[in-house]
Length: 330
Image (tube, rainbow, N blue to C red; front, side, top):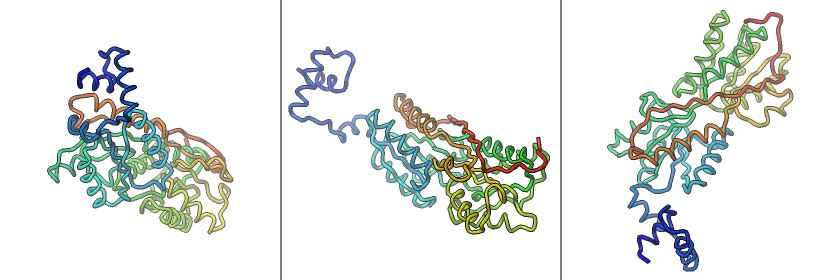
């Protein structure tokens, strides 16, 4: 038979007779034929590779989402290249430019700051592949993104503390370089405003998403002249640091300090006491990312920036880390 017929049979073309398809595949198996990925990339102008550029995998959130994205895309025939920028803009740029040389079909990108991958490619005068941002979004509104409802989630956690009677509520967060930090601060301040509680800037300590900063921030909040009675920790590394500081200071949760988290550790439910947490839905976020990539590859304009932002709601798990004081707000 012709090369074209054999090619269509191997690719699963619907117009190939089933008997012919089976004969071709049996012959391919007998001679141990494998498709030439480089040749396929030249024909399609992209490979079946997807770049996954994240801060790191020590975060349970990124580890879980990366695992799910790899499994989902793998089932569609894609391979994932994992790159870690470690919150370094220079390293982020280096990885983005290198991924283009691999002719990736798409890139899943967690931005370091406000600049999108498309802006970085434009500065370098390099054509951009399809990019979907994960968890954070850039400010230029040119890139598809899948994010959690960060502002709404922290609002709900803060409102929970206010309704338990707390007015001295601290927030341990990162500098507002990324969209996540800005939106979580916005949710915190909105909850205070809606419950007629004055905002005290001393109760917001901003540093970086690290365990050390979580510990340092917690100590600052409890050492104020009028210390915090409750703390919101909106990132998983901050939670670890805050718990370490609580242990060092010999404080008891929730008797001495209430704590709620916007994080993703599975051990929150078995900690003593169990921690009230707002969980980001790993499965749904990964699924939304993969759906966008697969849908874009099926269109003629897959390399053009999009403007779709999917915001996935978090899920509250209310546990025993909050003490109810004498008067409840709202």
